[in-house]
Amino acid sequence: MRAARTAVIVGSGGREHALARQLAHDGVTVTVTPGNQGMPDTIGEGSIVLNPRSAEELEADLFVIGPEVPLVDGLADRLRAQGKKVVGPGAAGAQLEGSKAFMKELLAEAGVPTAQFWTFTSVEPAAARLRQLDPPYVIKTDGLAAGKGVFVTDDLDEAIRDVEEKLSGRSFGDAGLTVVIEEGLRGPECSLMALCDGTTAVACAPAQDFKRIGDGDQGPNTGGMGAYSPLPLVDDSMVSDLLDVAVVPTLQALNARGIDYRGVLYAGLMLTKNGPKVIEFNVRFGDPETQVIAPRFASDFFDVLMEVATGSLSGPPAFSSQAAVTVVLAAPNYPSTPVLGGEIRGLGATGQLADPIEGVTVFHAGTKRPDPIGPFLVSGGRVLSVTALGETLEEARAKAYLGAARIDFDGVQRREDIAALAAKEEGAR
Ligand code: AMP
Ligand code: GLY
Image (cartoon, rainbow, N blue to C red):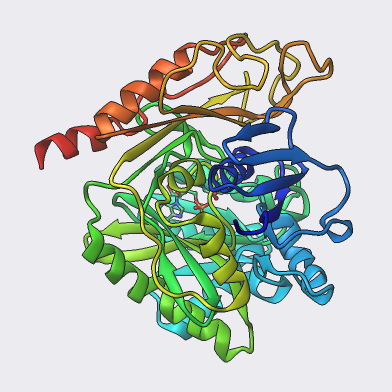
């Protein structure tokens, strides 16, 4: 028998829960810091426990850092300085997500296709630039804004008002004091998460995220309201092309700057009629994309992540042929100030469905349980994501919605159209 394997995951959301469950599924003893009260569980030989101490005070074979903020803040560097094996770039590499200006400069250097862009710190020149562009108008905060700093509109006046709000510091604080205006692109989106071990990049199965709060992509941007994988439009050979066009040159440009990038390079791509273009890079696993990618891992998840951390990737990971769909349940009034405290109905003692469905898993994000035998309560904007696996997207989608329908809280928001179009495209193939 091999020795028990241990991992620490940093973070507390649905992404971290999905990473933890997949590792536990492969027999790993997982500690999540700070984690969430919906996470602890025993899964076969593996288990998930919480520990409020910082990762720097914990010991494990492997450390995985979920969110961007600690990465930008240099947590991976500090853990490596302690001799720990870490999935996640250091602060230098994390600038790729921490500053859009840095990202755009690096992409230009690497020759990666992306939207044209202009950076502004005052309203008048920004408005003048917007007047010269065609819609859609795209305005982003330069700094981190939890996926919500992007405004896309066909209305010029609305676009200028958004610039004024951001530059005033009213809407996003310091993150908005520099704005990036981008050429507006159109086309289907694809999230490609690549695992990088410093020099080599391999692709995970592609996923698609639903960023807007409302059905039919209406309303404001959120952190993500649902996702699915695989994409009927993106086959294996296209994944390999996207990796070559978007990720490999970016990793090389990072290497040329002396950056040893070990972690996830997530390319947010738009498949335009003029070819794929990068709209963002994230330096971590996507949320909610991880909720559909991690459960599809057919390779041993721990082994692959260990190869990333130790610079020894042996090849691309294998993914199950099953499809996965996840539906996010969000708090009332999200993505503006969410209404917190509501009681969540339909969950059992471990935080999974009280009335379980085979192949359906509930990932916790904005939940808490002040009374350890009481109900879970809403404690954040994105509350839960319900993931289902199925033989087809249609089946996974039906099961995910069946699972989501068994959970309820006052004012729950969810999209009804996650993977709907893809399930049709899949049927038409
Ligand atoms: P980001 O946080 O940069 O991924 O942007 C959030 C969402 O805004 C993306 O998923 C797109 O739907 C949209 N978006 C971002 N950049 C552009 C662009 N240049 N053209 C059109 N839509 C965009
Ligand atoms: N789902 C988009 C992100 O993780 O940023």
